Image (cartoon, rainbow, N blue to C red; front, side, top):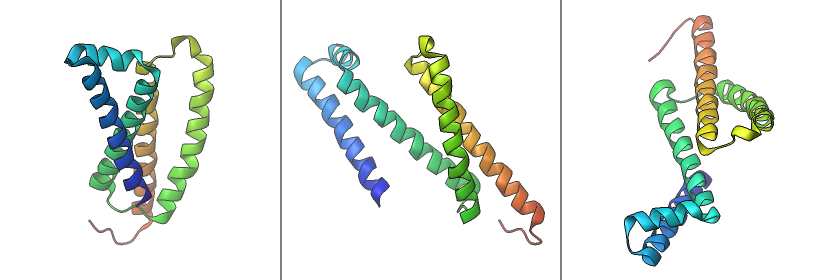
Length: 134
């Protein structure tokens, strides 16, 4: 329920930023330039991108893995904290190359790591389970 409220709030905030830019500039291209030059507007766009990544992850998880077991969710959360810490340390090493593309690639890396861990846990469970359901 909390994630649904936060997602809705993020969509409303993004719509208000885009609406405000279009209201001020009256055309598409100047509105885009205004949004990209404004730090608060870009922060809202980055948060919206993060929300899209999380929603995409939840959708793909539901399609490929269905309902996760408690052990799988616990392993995922535990490993994610270490991966985020490693990513933050990598950001300090590569601070000269810090750009939206760079952040997107690291986000993709974390996304793929999470699905790798889920697949690993699920295969481990399937190897030990005497009966396997769909």
